[in-house]
Structures are given as C-alpha cells and as structure tokens.
Length: 367
Image (cartoon, rainbow, N blue to C red; front, side, top):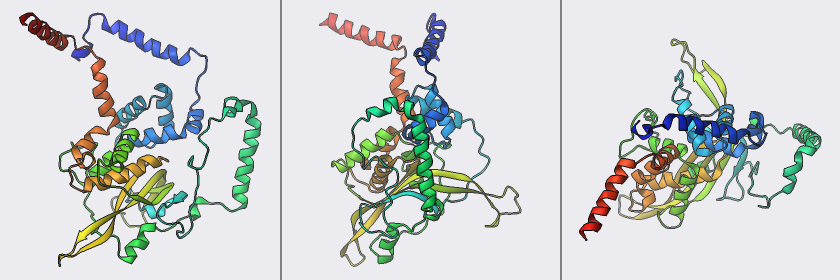
C-alpha cells in the first residue's frame, strides 16, 4: 500500500484509468467478443493455458479489456479463477480418448492411422496476405466458402469423434526399448493451493510448466537445445484434439464406473518427445534405451508443448546446466510473477533511491 500513498495520487490514478478507456474507444471501433474468439484463436489458446482457466468467452472478454496485452489477460483470468469455488474433481483423463484433429510424428514417416496434418501454419508461406485487410467486403463469399467446406466434410464422412488412434510410443514400449516405470497413483499436489517446496514432484513441475509463460517456456526449451542443457529430443507424437471430461455422480452412494457425467470437452495439444539415454544394468553393462518427455497445454499451442516436453525431461535429470535447475526454471517462467515483479519497479521508490543517492553524494565529497 505504501507504493500508492503519494499526495494527490488517487485523482491522478482515476484520470489514468479514464485514459485507458479513451484509448480503447478513440478510433471509433468496438471489438465484438465473437470476433475476438474466432479471429484471435492463437491468443485465446495461449492465455487460457497460462491462466489455467479453460473458458474461451471469458478469455475473449479479458483480451478486449486489456487491449490484447497477454500479461494483463492472464492476470485478469487468474484473479477471476481464484474466486471460483471448486465443486467437483474430474475423473482421470486418458489421452488415448482424444478426438484427433491433428496428429504428426517426427520420428516415424508411417504411423498406424497415418499422419493427420490438420490445422497448422507450418505448411504456409510466411508472407503477409494483404487481402485480409479488405476481406470484410467479401463477407458473403467467405460465408459461402465456409458452407461449402462444411458440406465437403460431411460428404466425406469426416467425423473427429471416430478418429482415435493408439500412441506411437506404445509400440516402442511393446518392443522393450522404452524405459518403463511403475504407475504412480499418488494424488498430485495442487500448485495453486500449496506453496512450492523443493525438491518438487513431477506433478508439480508439469502443472507449473503448462501454466508457464509461453515465450519463457519456449526460450528455456530452446536454451537446452543450444547446449545449456543436455536434452535434444525427437517428437514421437504431437496431437491436437478434444479430450472428454467426466465427473463422478454427485450422489455419494453412487460411485460406480457407469455413474459418471460428461460435462464437456477441452481442446489440448499433447506432445510425447523421445530422448535417447544410457542405463547401467546390475551386471555393470551399459545399454541404450529411450526416455519420454511430456508436454500438454490448453488449445493449440504446439511450440510450448514441445518445449515443455524438453524441460520435463531436463528437470527429471540432475545436472549443472540452468535448464536442469528446477528452482531456476520453475520460478522464472510464471508470467504473473515475473511481470508483477518487474512492473513494481515503475512504482515510487523515492525513499530508497534518495538513500542511495545520499550515499553516492557522500562518497564523492569524501573523495
């Protein structure tokens, strides 16, 4: 509170808030929420992941309020999320049930069911399309094109609900070249309710990574690839699709498998990266095997999910490189924590700076 206790500060703050509103309205255009949802899909997906709140409409409202500033959007969504009661816990989601929209592998050319390119900018020319600036004039043509595309999809019986495939790495497990671990059924800690303590568990790390600022996660994943870490994987499988969510029956006496309720689906990006490793057998011999790095986040956010899978494996390994230091990684990828601490430098530090200034002047006089 001491930061805003400046004489005349309250009135100045109110005028600053009015100025925000003016900047949003001064050009005469008011964004519609449905336009933000449909036209800013990438931004919506990014901020939902970083905020740990899957709600496209709320994300669109926050984008509009913050004028598209991702840090402000995430701050607004997390603040709102903290007010929500937790009424239910979903059942464990098996990602094999994903309704596939996109599925590729960089490890194998031919995978069971084939590679599904789906929606991606990977295959486009990175050139500005100036026709977009005037496409409002062709709104009728665009509507007809969408209707025609939908009709073609129906004619070829394209139904995402029927497109479900096993995991690529399952075939490597069957071959015995993947390292297998016992299933851990311990209840994961909730990083939004409990303070982080080191060393962390993998469930905590995965939560923080999926909530991490997209650019920060990508940057540290890239750092590992460049040698500031020892993980350089191959993408075994990247999936984008819808995961169905079920909750138990609210009636305590009815908890059987059949007594569950489908409450909706969430679109996610899931990545399983393959990392070569060497293990030491009991007889002292060494053997080449494969490990897996895992990444998952809301929406279609492929670079983040891949980088997350790199950092997941980095943090499982204890080495001296920065990307293997869990405190360094986990404390510095949170957008709200980072932007909040940096932004506080803009607030008045009059007393502390005057103290430093007096010290500098005193030493100069003495000299």
